Image (tube, rainbow, N blue to C red; front, side):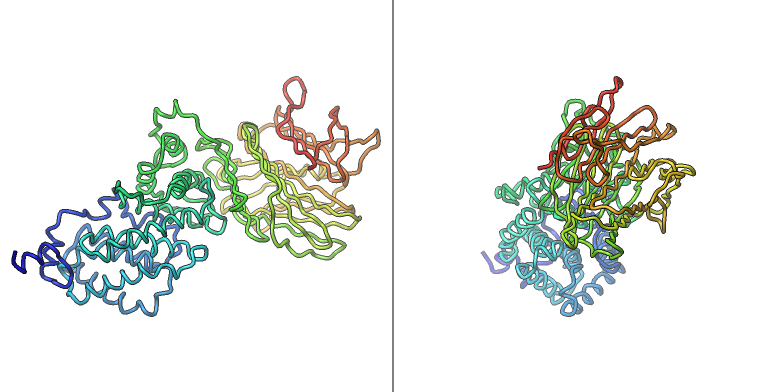
Length: 581
């Protein structure tokens, strides 16, 4: 066999002319975007609207995608000039996270550029990409999750896929599998929920891991460890749960971002099951009208999810597109919430509180801890707790009643001695949503394009004519509740009706008398409320002092908390009871 034949059988960039011919004539591997299965969007555009990168990075991805579709001479010349500039800028920009997606863009088009580029430029680009792909252990996964997964997992895997002829590239399979498995098992809990600090990276992470799984294909060695594979399967379900009806992720500031059709379609085909397909049919706007017949046979899992480890909770009334969805994310002193009801985001942002004791403003708590989580067919319930100054405690309750379609939000400020307590809390309504207070009573209505909810401030008297040290108002775009009292403890609940079929019905609530051993209790010891909306009624009770056997409205209990629904016979059926311990 002659020397020329050896070089053709074992091509390498060092023998440039043969290498260019080889890349042009080889049948495999196919272009990565064709293998991944992109139909509408180029794979590197998946999740791009929700990825913290510059417009220059997004422009590069768009330009490389267009070049792959229509590689004309002038477009090729501009792309090569851009590659030259990119390589020259690398030493200055190498610490920027956006370089991960940029490096992936060049790895996608590098084989096709060989016929138009000089040998020196092309080889410099390959050497730089190889250097980046082997230096990923220097990246901190928790602080730079996207860069870690792009540069440590996806880039080496893509180079290994693109250049199976080169031993240095083939050696990258193992490091890619290691980095990707590490990312899935350390960024997610065992049920696929991310830690709260990584919640805004859900869509780009799903895009990264889906592209990798598609490129890896059905090779003999799995791409991920068994535990990472399980995390990926669950993560797809969580990514669906974290998608609003408009197709955007929760807490996204993007008004009309990409629905990522190809991303979800590909992910469902790779790691989804029948249950995921039915859920996607219900949630994703792009799949509306494609309701699978499998949905009639599949029993769906719980629509809500909670990760105490990740400090992230997903409340959901059901899997339908018209469901009530509330996401609660805890990060240090902040509790971020976003409420979606039907096709409208009602509020989004921090649930802030301000507390004064004897005129002195308390510092915000350093962190919120979960002390209770419960979910069943009736309700999702979460209770959080934070420590304030001087040993005071702030407890926060959140209830989503699934069938009854109401939200119950309450703060309890708990101390041991009597003080002048001034409390203020607010929820940021989204643009186009306003609060309209009633004229004669303390409730009000949340209005968007139409009625979105009614808010009853249960700690206040129903009628404005009654004496009250508080209010429910719309101030600077925020729904704000105020309450002031001299007491050792105070409870401030909001009942938010989200059932549009009750929107025209009457609203009323009453403070009930609570007794212990025939002695009436003060509101700092225990409180109870009866709420009526249209022809439906509910009962709420909260013990603030030491646990004791107490009675109200014919009920006798020693629990710390009770939420109940009155049936047609007037009997109270429990939605949830919480014991004092």
